Image: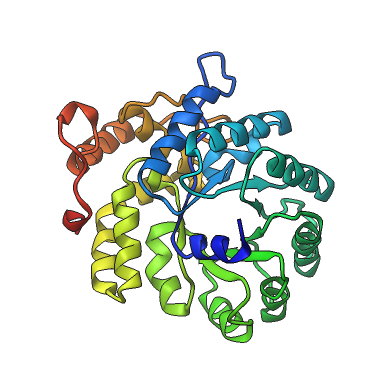
Length: 314
């Protein structure tokens, strides 16, 4: 797929499906493929394989390849599959090449987790990966300390399709968008639906989402409202999903994936617990609160009703 095709997809919703585990604790590729198929069926524009909601750092390199395989199979060409890569630069390059051979359309480089990573050297990490892979690269920038010049160095690389901007430094985001080539990389909100209106006001396009695993109609409704410049409508939808997103922030974001996976299981696909050091399971009080919320959203299978239409999302 062309660079322009990927950049167009990034202006939409970039969904990050969960990774399913069987009762033996191993990656369940069949169930994981079903999760990806469900997200693709919802019309999500870009689907990220082994992103943070997919527990990238809890997976071995071999397991990451299993997730790529499940993603490509489940999506089945309905949307581009962006394969997440990371760890050491050499490992990331190897992952990118394997992702290409398996049918991925693009790659997304996770933020380096080295505790001694210098901001400008992290930019070099992303740019080196972009040099080494023929697939378009999305750079996942979530650390503090980057400068406008750093962001421009990323945005102006010819093989970087987008920058998943995942800090709350909106002033840096706004200044970087103004300074970068408008025909270069797309700046994407990397903090999901809740931050999407503020990021859109600063000039970002599109956003990432874990909510798509459960209620993609809300994600698409937020995008439609923002594309129409209707910030009141976007904020109304964000207010409706706030309890879900707020629950994910518990325990210093330790429940982030847990809430999503338990919701997916409640909705009919048993994807198993989260691997440590994430929170494996919710306590009973949070689980009941989550089930009540999903009932209000009409996404639970026992209701016998279809999820609310986008028009009713507000």
